[in-house]
Image (cartoon, rainbow, N blue to C red; front, side, top):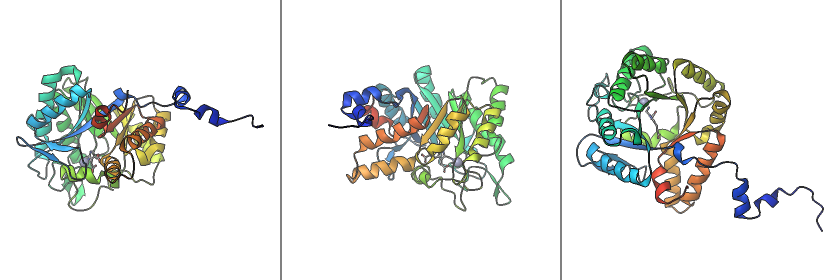
Length: 326
Ligand code: PBG
Ligand code: ZN
């Protein structure tokens, strides 16, 4: 005979009970799949450090997205990889940047049935590999702002639903909001990379985009991972400047920041399950160290539990293909 009053294990006895009392569920409609679009024709190269993710030219990516659409993907995030890089990031601008052309092609095909977000940053477009333009050996904040604003406007003109500034220059959300308002793009969303940390977890992404800085690192503009309160200051600024969605990036090592954001704002909170987080799972699964499906579900549930409404993740296609979420 037992004499314990409280037995939490009673609620864990079988799967039917566990499902009944489960507190968190991954929200399928909150998931966004990331894509890399590159110039050329007929290009489809798997990114070595990110198995299952490709660099594709517009003609090829349109086929991939067509299949993904049929699979149920309705929300995507695009990253452009230009052929030409220079000091002023000129191939990021205008109607014929690779990202802009792709956005237009997709929006012409899918209209409002596909939500298209595009990254706004210069690192894939500058010859230095930095997220802003260089003056006197420094990434110049204020000279970078108008270029970012122009890039965002070009994307909006192509029909982009949402722009995601990931550069971490001060004041960029406000500048982008101003230029969008001034040009009658009042409905374009801004998903701000609000707390973007200078993280090792972006390694595979920089591989994918050939966007690693040639000299130095990004610590002069991305956040220091020792800091938590600083993220709240960034949050206050992005809200004031007109962000619609605020993001924490990376996700898994920054669940405290996601949880803080959830408590500090009623705006939608996004989390970016970045390339390094994806690759860790993929490489471990490939070595049969873990079960991929279970680990992906554990990771995305944790990000959801911390407070994210939206998760940008490279796993979405696999999740839908495998029927991992309902
Ligand atoms: C561009 C950008 C980066 C990522 C998103 N936008 C790379 C970086 O800041 O170095 C990283 C995404 C990922 O790792 O999946 N600034
Ligand atoms: Zn950048």
